[in-house]
Amino acid sequence: MGNSYDAKKRSIINSYDGRMKLRVHGYALLLITLLGGALRFYRLDEPRIWLDEALTFSRICGTFHQLGGILKYDGFMPLHYVVTWLLTQVTYPTPFVLRLMPASCGTLLVPATYLLARQMTGRKQALLAALFTACSAYYLSFSRDAKMYMPTWFFATLFAALLLMWLRPKTGDTRR
Image (cartoon, rainbow, N blue to C red):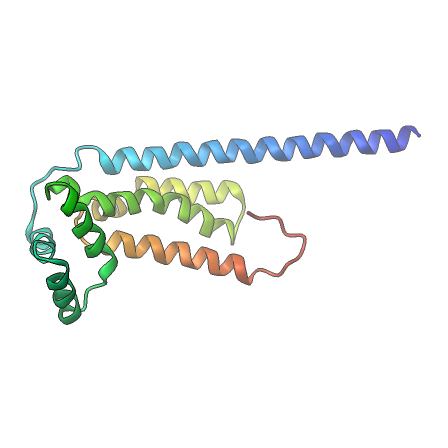
């Protein structure tokens, strides 16, 4: 009787410890993501627009039909330009508005990187990968650029993570 009780007690304690670790890692990921967002959105309207961003502005200035024609012949991916065009239909096209989608995708890249790293390694290493993504000067620079690069990297990372999750054998592996 005592052995069964002790095993049950250990099982409950281990389950509680696992949930606490999961919760702590969740809060850590949230803090890292908030750090990444703060770094990306701080003074997002500066510096002034440069040449490539001005070309983004020129592409979204017309009608939706004109935007479609430009994207068709220039070979650009439409999602970034369509979202930016929609934003400029309800707000004035300031540098902040033009950089809003890349900064948002750059912020979301932090948990997407965590998710991708979790498919290959443990929670601590995945948090470290997310922290590197949040503080990377390379990612910060492209997150503050009114171009389609950051949305592309975000969706590529997310799709890779989801593909690896889908391909994982349905065993007792509880990485999530």
